[in-house]
Length: 525
Image (tube, rainbow, N blue to C red; front, side, top):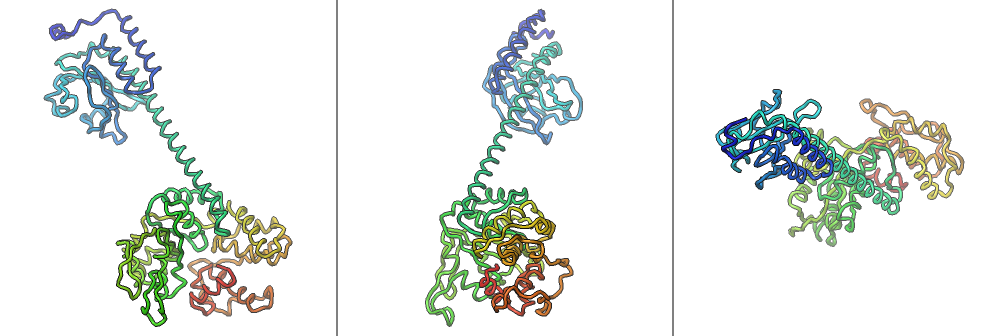
């Protein structure tokens, strides 16, 4: 026993161990009744004053990085700061085993002289470790304003207290983890509910551009979309042709605060450079020969809604420079105009090109790429979501049946197997086109494997240059009228070009704009 204790006012220790144990039993009962950590430590501090007097009781937790500590609570006879994080003053204690620590020089010890305890006038401390699973997780600290207040004689009773506090801290951690998990699960359920609501809404509004699919990759895309939709961030949708980029863009629009504004779409590959700029920015009267009157562009038409730029990688460099100003300054001018107009729109862009490679090849502006690529989303190809193929088939056949007036009776097992095994270079769009052709051939009967135009697909690296002579085959056209023959040629050209419209247009001897015009006529796009 330290002789200074009597003169400093601390009574001699009660030698009746049973009294101490009774106090600890009461402590244990307290810990099992209370879940609030601050309340636990306040009550613990009061209970142990008779067996281990102190001015402040603190519990520290080692942070995950192991170089900082966090004070969960501090309690005692004074009002002390709570819940703060600070640098670990004793990093060696993280790696070296220790049983207890007594300091009697807090105000002058360089490691703790600037600590909150020192600022509160604490002079001495008795510290004991808290370990879970054999690893140091924190410490229990008893503080006093008097020097030499704690000795090794206090360690056994302090250790008993520390063990109970460690148990309480462990339970608190488990409760916190359960609470955080519950919050995460609640948010996930809210997100899923939002996705379901928006999916149902789009199903009723958008016809064949519906949200169809239950596979994990597709659900992950919709969950990402639901999260970013609530922001004003520009979204860049990446994916192969036919993966549903416009479907996701419409989903983003309906889930955003701009849902009451217009959704205006522009296919950047469908128009030549001069027409693209006039469509996008609009023009004033007299801006060019045919401009008999002023016309607002799609940016103005979108108003406070969403502008969707499909195939943005095909936008010409001059138009890219002008559109960059829209994203940077939120303003633009009509062609031939001098007035500066505001662009209060949200931009969603989509492409099947590798824009990073296009930037390296100086075919796409780097500054525009970074402006568009605020939130990048990659859409999975159909071959990575094969579980969705049966559901897509059911929905598409029902829709096609209504449009042709004689819906097929279903799909044979062999045909289903062929659809499941196909690589789908044209993705969902190719699936719908193939099912439409098969439905016509089935003429109200069962779709069989022979009705499916599943041509073998060459590797992308070995894709040959197509010629019109290569498009025809020995099979006769479905009908002999000119429009049907043209439609059949376009279908075959797209299939052989792996649904690359640029390659198909070259094979047919058409410009890309001419191909788009014909695609809209037979409703193939």
